[in-house]
Every structure is written in structure tokens, then in C-alpha cells.
Image 1: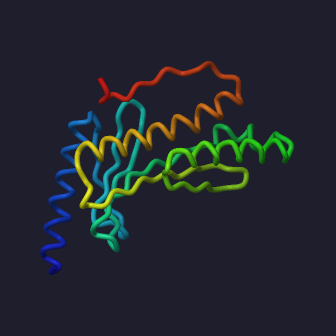
Image 2: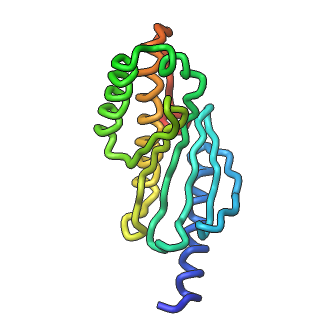
Length: 163
């Protein structure tokens, strides 16, 4: 396969994903990243995700969410070390069930990064929408665990594209 074919496929995939995001109710902004063939930031109903194709993996699309947990710093910094570790264990165990890739940044934790990978041979609108929902539900799962610890009321949430 020549570079022209790869570039053409990437451009087709980029336009397809942009169209799908719009049809799912997302506001889409394109961004440039030297490590990505293309990238989008997308917002809907208070949710924000990223979608990109890594430059070194032309057959892969990645859907990401980056969670800012600095507002929960009290939970992590004002607790005894064993309680803080217990909460981190609970968060990590909750994320294992999602089958998403994830990592955390900071000590105490300040950010959690989630990602779902779809290879182009399995990229359909249904699979794409399901992957977005999977990321959104993982985000909800993290915030539910943290909000429960802070004794907040149970929130109501419904993805804008699920009717």
C-alpha cells in the first residue's frame, strides 16, 4: 500500500468520524497533534472526548477522555494513607470492569486518562457509538465512586444521543 493510499484512507476515516460525531450530537473541533494523523475534540451534554488516529498506527482510531480530579483533591490528600490507597484500589478495580485502557497521573491522583481502541477493519458507526458510550460510562463510574465518598446526591445522566 502506498503513502497516497494510506493518506486517502486516513482522510476518508477522518471525514467519516467527523460526520458520525456530528450525527451523535457532538460539537466537533479539529486539533493538530504531531503524533496524530487527525484529531478531534468533541463535546455533548457536558461530556468531552477526544478522537484521533495515531500517526504510527494508520489502522487504529482512539477514543479518549481525560478526567480532571483536582476538585477531589481533599479525598486524596486529607485521608490517612490506608484510606487513600483503599479509594485508589476501588477506582482502579471499577475501571478494570470497563475493558478500557487507563492510567492516572499525580500523587495524590489529579488526572485519570481513559482510552478505547478500534481498528479500522472493525470501525462501524455502531461500534464507534458503543465505544464512546463505554468511555462515557467509565467517566460516570469514576465520578460516582468519588461523589459517593463525598456524600453527594446520586446524579441523573443520560447520553444526549441515546433516545
